Length: 171
Image (cartoon, rainbow, N blue to C red; front, side):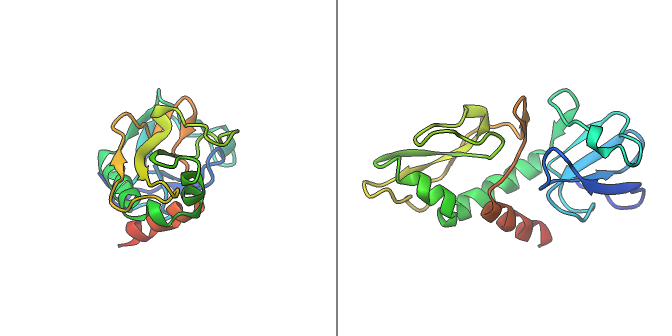
């Protein structure tokens, strides 16, 4: 569900997750996107009275006001399915999960220890890892329990995956 930029009031970066842009479509409808272009596919929408100009830092996206976009979720899973094997951060993590499955977490919560697993609602999917600690291509399995927005915040990506997602959003 994408909105056309006919009634855009304003756009700005979300202070609590600077990868995201906030596009105020109307007084009662706001969308969050990884694109600065308000017409591109949004992560989701939220309603309520947006903050007054220069009060953007008080904006809070939460599970109470956020409605995830299933089309975005599917796009995100497709990007991970295709490109997670190229991401250096996940390649390094794979070394700790030899002959096992690597949980592919988002970056809502920075893990404190090696071998620590993200919570299931922060795990986008899983990738098989061989005995040498290398991710096995085409083994990505999406996690249906993953939540774009939960009590830990809204989806946050590694720099590499952010760039890959933004390429898809431009197409």
